[in-house]
Image (cartoon, rainbow, N blue to C red; front, side):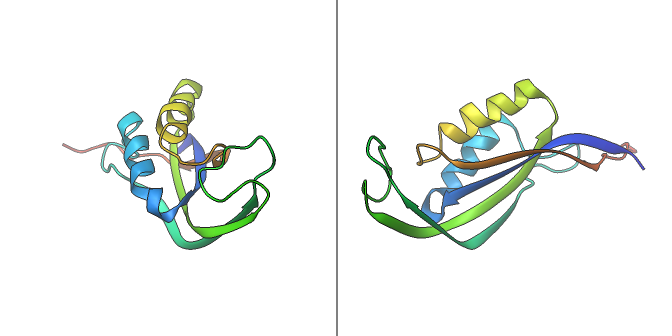
Length: 119
């Protein structure tokens, strides 16, 4: 068994901003390996709740008011390369996500390595 070191990235995004976020991430990294691209997982039926504090500039809701809306949870991986991770976060996620502070979680993880191609 061959393992590959990766960063597993989980991001919560309003459902109406999902495609724009995914497309922005894929402009930085194709989300895949030698055999597949556009590899990601998502759950659509989540909810987000927050109350923006004074000084915040919320993309949704209003300062001081409790806000809820449907969100999707997006999960994908990139090779464990800090420069690539920084590009994905800054250019792929932050530039294409409507929230001031995206719900973003990054974990060091492992996945099965891609077997050698036989062509």
